[in-house]
Image 1: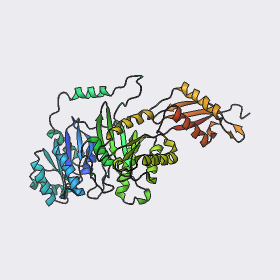
Image 2: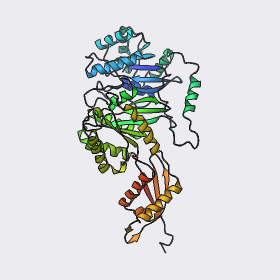
Image 3: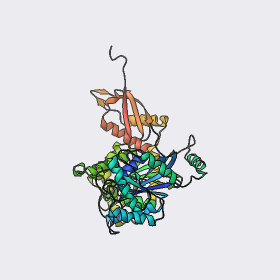
Length: 472
């Protein structure tokens, strides 16, 4: 199994893929990073936000950035905001891969943006994509007219010419700094964890997924955390289509934060592209350690919010409830109590979930979110000593004895924690597998209150012991 690539870092050279819509930029991005990381569909404008990945080019890692298609549009429009994001990425690039569609030929849009890229004074490598077959290779030569040098003919979809492309990229990258190997060793030492250290610390980036319904303010929250207009935002619902991961350093901790597409009811999802977006969001949640569930505080808790929370619990992830647009709430005490009451009734299995109120648009109280994420991660990783756990278990049994099942009382002997992430406990005893659900809830609530495990899913399993005299 191939090890995962490192996270993008500031010392990696930046390679940006740019061009008009539907020339195969995301397909080329996936081909270079070696995995299906960006959404690909036969529809123009699938990519809206810049998506970053790491590609290994002749033994050297580069930050590869997939951008939205360059289109002429008013600055305040959606396509204008997408173009501004792509242009910002190009200005920061060490190398620009300018893509054209060899089968479609050179269009006026290609000529317009080729002139713009020449004015940016960035190194450019001209890519004639979709050049499979002899006809495509011949059509690729038309790209000479753009004045960006000799075009490199390839087919990202079929992998033709990609090896030559990687050699060309490596030849055009800035010289590798001599201290790079030393700095990498120091960075690895920073994440080392001493034995017996309490509380536990992440040995790598803490993976966070920002989830919620459409138009709850997830992308605005991401921009507020990063301090820049990294994500496309606006009044339109469903702007984010792909899951966008960004690395953020905060104090001694590194976070890998993923902004996801809004999750709607299955009955309302009918387009194949939206199904792909939802699948990417759910996959990001499964890979995360902590999920930040963003709610529009002015609208309260909807049934879809509860469905997303149940998905977080089912996947066993720590959760932080983020109440966005708090500055627009009139009666804050009543609103907070109403939300918490609804959660306590509908989500008893996540009782005590931490709540953070803020305004992503203004940045008010946004600094409270990452400390809450750290605390939730710590609880998610908690381990309870076996001695204290069984003393608590005996007290719970004395307070309320296990019920009768088929006229016979269950004999529960002891309990142990078998794993964390989330905290998982196993009860051993005679016919313990017949323990009713209401008694399990009684024990889970006791675990949560006694050992301070608020807001994280608690798994309680049972394992019966065999009676050696049952057969005789």
